[in-house]
Image 1 (cartoon, rainbow, N blue to C red):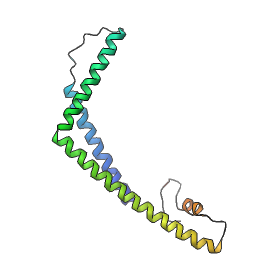
Image 2: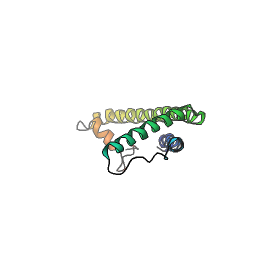
Image 3: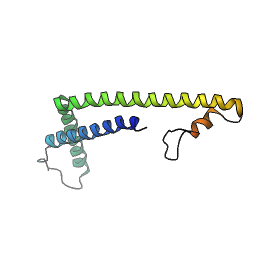
Length: 131
């Protein structure tokens, strides 16, 4: 089962690194010099929020043009594809094995169902394993 978890760990690691890069882009673009809003003024707070959102979208746009960010996004797409493929392959194998086991049990015990067989292959932590 470790084989299936490794691509997901790689994807999470890459997503974390990308998140840090995006955070840096946003921080670089942020203009903290405009402190014209007085505390307690609703209109000023809303306008400030609007400016900050606009700044955030502009910095994300700039980040999308950054070659390092683009490369990370491409790598994440590849890692996601690999993780999904590995997971679906493992699940397919486990379900196939469970159905074969259910078919064998069908000859000796009519009370067993495919759901019972699949439940038997999941341990207490939710990991799929041998029954």
